[in-house]
Image: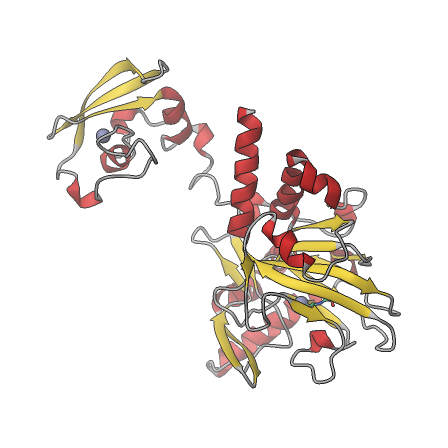
Length: 370
Ligand code: OGA
Ligand code: ZN
Ligand code: ZN
């Protein structure tokens, strides 16, 4: 473990908590990195106390004589190499594979993430548990949500902000006479992520079931992070190709032309799985060297086969009043075909997971201070 005096000086000074360095009202930094003197170094380290009396170290800096007081608890949690600071690059950002519990269908047996709407809206602990499920498993199913037109928007507003798109504030999933998307027919829809042709992609999707009286139309979810991790273990080269080759996803109708060039498996700067885009309906024409196209298509098939493995797919049937909230950067969703003679109606909306994570963090903060 490094000590205060061996910590990188610019890093340590950038974290000075004093009122000259940070506005005490909001904690925001008041200086630019370029304002710090060249040759910055720790001159002396003294035992001290923070303003509220906690044990601390006081650093006297050279050449400018600035003084910084760091609480021991802060140093223990943040100094590079301290166990609490996490392995390697420190804790993740909450979005990558290391911050998730990866699952297959059997792994969720007996602990399907769900909550009752009445309890979810009345009890902050139930709300926190439901939002935690979205972060951890990638989804939660809220039950007993009122069967009201546009209710899905109110569900999104319990934790964040609706993301409006060319489909509108919400979209109707039901059979349409002239569908601009196969979702609006009775066709089977294989596991996919929504809107991969958008950059940024909507990170959360909601599907609120109003009517599900048709023959068929059952739902499926697949953990795309789990499938990608399996691919990495079984065929590292295929995995690598899918993290590297940009895929042009497209959507076109008479009012819209959307294109995004992203890989099927997005990795974060530390090389961990962070974002899946997979949608056979909207993959456009790749234009790459022939050898790369060969490698891409072999890997795409391999990943597609993994994603269709029955043991990876959690199956259930949405009932009226169910609202599924899921991470559209991780889970793939699917439905079986349904008879167009029967009635089936869902209302869908998009939102973003940073807002959900923020609501969860505030709920947790309040639970700690309550
Ligand atoms: C969608 C979709 C699934 C369903 O609208 O994006 O995938 O159950 N719908 O109809
Ligand atoms: Zn300072
Ligand atoms: Zn979809």
